[in-house]
Length: 208
Ligand code: TMP
Image (tube, rainbow, N blue to C red; front, side, top):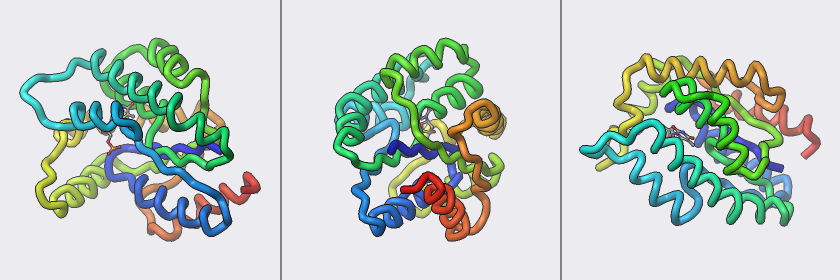
């Protein structure tokens, strides 16, 4: 079972992934949690390149190739082998993030991105995706307060983008969800425990 979480910054993905991991492990499952970009040496290296404020702007096309390169490595070396062993994989972001951020947000062609996504994943598609939807302003406020609370962590280049960008990304996610049955839209602004309950109810329906 391959489960992904999507949403804009501050939508609460990582909290919900942690809670779902505990829930599934209590049910006797072996669970692997991953994040994109990341999860491999290449992915973590590229992540810090992409998210660190630098004096050179990374152009949208370069950004797209970097995310896809990390994904190809993660799918081949980590996700596929884990799924083959019967491990449940929970991934913080996957192909929908590329469509939402590089496609809807940066304006790159959606069809090209779909082709690159399927080339990077070798056709691997999540069994279910939870889209935690939250208003861009509320999400960014949460993300900001989290970053300020963590000593030494500076804003990253995505969180410096104007609100308009995040609104475009949010609308993109919602549009993708309309055309993809595997995507469950969850209101991300609510109480953490109640969101977790909703997610568990959906997972139980999948008879895990
Ligand atoms: P996060 O996982 O901590 O939210 O940080 C990852 C950042 O990378 C986030 O701003 C979204 C961005 N991103 C893309 O723009 N495209 C992608 O394909 C992925 C996986 C992430």
